[in-house]
Amino acid sequence: MSKPLLVAKSIAKNQIFDLHLLSDWANRHGCITGATGTGKTVTLQVLAQSFSDIGVPVFMADVKGDLSGMAQAGQLSPKMQQRIEMLGIEAPNWQACPVTFWDVFGKQGHPVRATISDLGPLLLGRMLNLNETQEGVLQLAFKIADDNGLLLLDIKDLRAMLQYLGDNASEFQTEYGNISAASIGAIQRALLAIAEQGGEEFFGEPMLNLDDMMQTDTSGKGFINILAADQLLQAPRLYSTFLLWMLSELYENLPEVGDVAQPKMVFFFDEAHLLFDEAPKVLLQKIEQVVRLIRSKGVGVYFVTQNPLDIPDTVLGQLGNRVQHALRAYTPRDQKAVQAAAETFRPNPELDTVAVISELGVGEALISFLDEKGRPNMVQRGFIVPPASQIGAITAEQRQTIIANSIVAGVYEKAIDRESAYEKIKGRVAQNNASNSQPAPTAGNDNQAWGRSSNNTLQTNSQQPAQESDGGGIAGALGGMFGNLFGGSGIRRKDNVAETMVKSAVRTIGSQVGREIIRGVLGSIMKKR
Image (cartoon, rainbow, N blue to C red; front, top):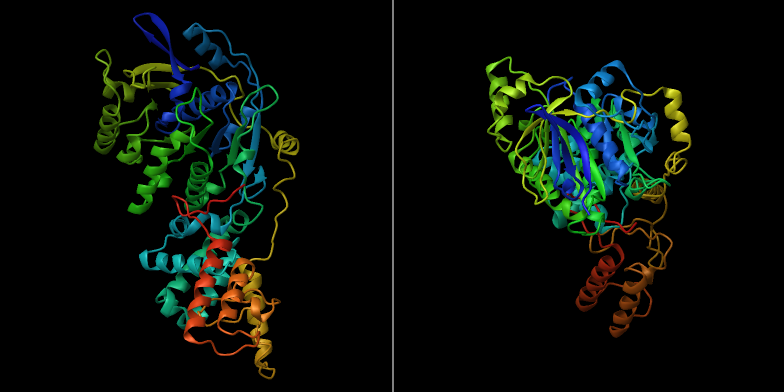
């Protein structure tokens, strides 16, 4: 059953009536727009608390630090008392929201991490601002790592992989294509810049489990997950890529639920223009696809930005619930922006939308939510109701107390650095350097770690017997079976044509069974949690 969420009060013809967002249409997405200082943050706070009260978990980025106040109960102020009397409503039931703080840098919240492999080449190329040729080389690095079972978990893994490809480009050219040394260098420089902006802290393990964000407290209220983004916003590409990665993870891992009485989760994307600035066409297409389809997973996405023109038309057309705060028209360009913003609403014959957008005061907005049949309501002018939680930031001591008592306290604080591409590649290089100063191995002892096989793949099982080096497990069993058909005796010798064909097929089967990787809609890797 749909639940009406009170967001604002409208005054028309000396009558006051409610403006509700219906919970069963909340996953049809929305936007909150308006100039700086017009009240977007309070509107975001009211919406988030309303969702939390009905048991819907929320994620939002706190770009100014103001949203941390949701963890404390609000209190009456003179301005709030004036607003309450004007609207003729009772004071809110002051209460705090259940809040979990997160921070990529691990200072103002629990650390948030993702692996290089999970982010994928498309999003990573966007973050690194690579051109088409450089993106192609990055995709080759991921492909070769996937084919050889190399885990790309953190930045040093990818840097080691790129260095290995650059040093051995000629060995991969026939199978994978040309690997440009200039492109390798450009990617390495971009990785260094990202590492200095916080990539070292973001990439790694343990990776964020989104189930930890989709929780409710003992009273049934949804947790509000607040990402500290004031420092992260100084690296806008890292910020926007991280939020887009979270959306893709939700899209890939949540089941289809269709129409629901209320969302499974609501995702607020603040400073949304950073997502679309200079984004390549292929990425914009993927974003549109995710926004269009993620609602069937029960997730509502709300973009927060200054002007609806910051959002591409293909995405803006998917946003059914809209709150427009004031826009100031000081220049001809601003006037065009106001006109365009007014045209995105369903007209109200009793309201001059263009004129009102410039007249709105702080805490006022033009509002149009979907009705009970999923149709946009006519735009109305309304006053945002006061939130029940605190407006403004909490103290550092209060934040640390909440972090220490969080349901995920201690889960993500300690980074894990398990064996991955960096360790294996460095081990191979060290062993090759050692073998160069020793006599050549005998014919029966040629299974050196990370040696290159006849089909140009990297051998990672340094301690396996020679007869198992063709795959192991299922592949090894098949290899032994087919090898016996050709008189195999367990002694290494040059393969004939038939043996080579069979072993190639066996390796392919083993690779597909043991290391098959399915890439998601944004290039990340789907994993079973």
